[in-house]
Image (cartoon, rainbow, N blue to C red):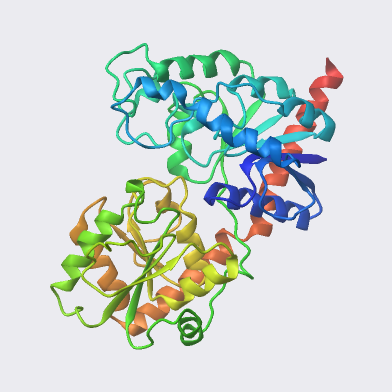
Length: 423
């Protein structure tokens, strides 16, 4: 059985990294897995992308045209909103590869037109990395539940009209995907519940399979050595925070962490804590975090990330919304407890007061309380660290995740072949 993963990128971004890990995990257990991407960063020969730089340049220019209709909404929020309305050349490439099963992943950025999905003519599995697949264009809904009906009057667009751009995108999806042979995989129970409540996916099969990890790469490293490598202090408690655009993406909750740190600075922690941030370089005017802060910049390889997690005493993931929360699972695999809010995908990763702390949603005081609770007692911290690693090995081991996907693919393939034979 030949599996093809379609993703905008192979390693650039959290969704891409999760996809590439799955691809490698499947190959490790003997599955003929390949990837088709718009932007290739690895040198993996099983990942296919436009080879000529001209085509890659055209793809980047395409993004500009893709976003032109958004200019009609000057009051829109400056978050990712994908229209996927321009034509593409994916079908001939898929035909050439001739897979038995197609696994869609994060396909925005102008990579694949909504209507193209209908033309793939194979059993489809769609792994959700955010909410775009079942909304009228947004990737995170905030407080909006209009995706449960037919979108329109989109708060992300700053629109008051029902027949707006989000309604048009929703209608295109509803029309194109009406009779698709489509199965949904969600990395978290929360996102699965959102998908099942959506008007587009409410009647589809939805499976929950978490994102996997190579726990040989993401494993505990001696903290003293890790700090020495990263030039971090040995005599302080270190709080780690990180994400792509760590300090500028409001959804990642940096401002909530900032407020929680100010609460901690009022207590006895003033001279005992320091902050470590990855995913952002130090800005010209650094924000006041109430403690000395070390900026590690963008970390692209697994070993450096594992070193950063191992150097910290606690990882804080204060996000508003996470489809899963990959930095949390990575941190646990490195034996570093996680503090997060008891909401969205992070609830599937962090077990309250077992491998970390789940604060009351978006309450800064409880977030600060959770950070202190994790680090204030050394014996407790050792137990949390042990449970963190143990949980990662039990729930997120990439071999186990790959086999769960393979079982799903095999089930769908057998049903597809049986249906074709009987027809």
